[in-house]
Every structure is written in structure tokens, then in C-alpha cells.
Image 1 (tube, helix red, strand yellow):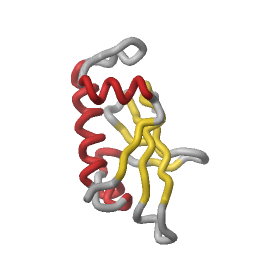
Image 2 (tube, helix red, strand yellow):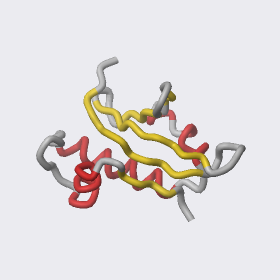
Image 3 (cartoon, helix red, strand yellow):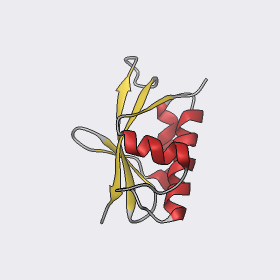
Length: 102
């Protein structure tokens, strides 16, 4: 059983389901492919801590959310609702995906 992933953003859920560009999220095709691959990989993780083991994701914690790198330009913003005190089990809520300039 993998980690539960939910979409708080219905348009991003549509991008994931259709695997193509839609209004407002007209990312380049390869970014959509990376986005889908990352979401699929998150669902396959048996616990949340395994996300830290993917250096290419560059998982970062901010005050009120987390962020994962899709590419040097784009990131996925997400929230993690931990289900246990050890913070290994939980639900990942995808909030937004946008351009990120570092």
C-alpha cells in the first residue's frame, strides 16, 4: 500500500488525469510528464520519509507547506497531514504547481 495522495487543486487533478495541458496549467509537455511521474512515485512510497530519499526532488519545508522540484523552473507545493507521532505515515495534499525562481 502506498502513500495517500489527494489533490486540493482540481485543475491539477485534471492535468494529472488527462496527462496534458489545460487552461492555466499550460506547462511544457515534459513538465507535465515529470509532474505525473512524481505524483505516481509519491503514491508508491510506503511512508512519507521516503520522499526525502529522492535528492532530485529537493523536498523543502516552508512555514505552512512543503515543496518538491519538478525542474529548475517548476515546483509542486504540497501539504503533508501526518497520521502518526513519528511523522512517517500521512496523506499528501497537492496544493499548487507553479514557476519557481531560485
